[in-house]
Image (cartoon, rainbow, N blue to C red):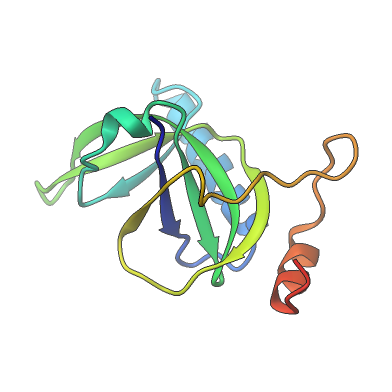
Length: 143
């Protein structure tokens, strides 16, 4: 069975903000020999790793709305300079825009069943609409 993670994208105003962070981190990881992956460090380790690795994604909440997802490819334990063990959630660098879905603020992450996950959003031949347009339409309740 597959399960996803729902996570706030703290500090991002738009999908383009997240896209810039992902590109920077994926490039850094590639240069250091970790491969072209994006990672997100978190204090807690998910308990449902097997289900997450069975096709799971992180669905990012940006400004109160689920707007984009990244496929999860693995997990690694990392020890920081402060000697605290954290978990790196390894993610594909490709972002997939989703149908907007409003969410209230929360801490940490939430597990998200595939039935509750928003569908990917594409227009025509795989072209994604601009993130600003999606945000405005979602705020107006039109999506």
